[in-house]
Image (tube, rainbow, N blue to C red; front, side, top):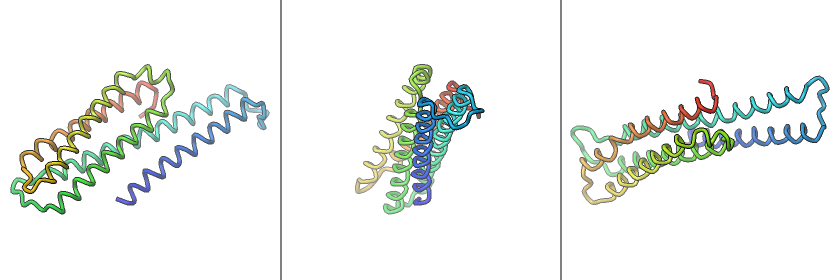
Length: 187
């Protein structure tokens, strides 16, 4: 768990490094301090766009990775056919599901923040759909946690709230893929 969290923070750090490097390149290009006399402004612009696409691709891939983790933890929350309730085990599973859901939300926010205004207007319906799915997943995770706090949690209630999560995450992932395709992030 710590390794995955460190990977998430590493990815955010690298995103910040890329953003800083891009703004330094942009400032250098706009100030006329171009130290490479053979590189034209159009080549610099292409380089800047490539870095921007690379950053967006990295953030998109982090969303897909985070979605896979949420799906995995949702499957782990599904009670077995013959349910021997172990409160500590299900609390841990619930915590992992909640943390994976929070990571996915943070990944999605970072990905959306990397989009330019013209890209946002192009994929606005998909972004709105992702936000609806996000609210639904968070609501279900909260309901699962509330059920587990009860003295005698109901297996059927946990199944009822857990079983749709993988389907919601699949729809979320599909919307992110459509966003990536629309803004020109290659597969």
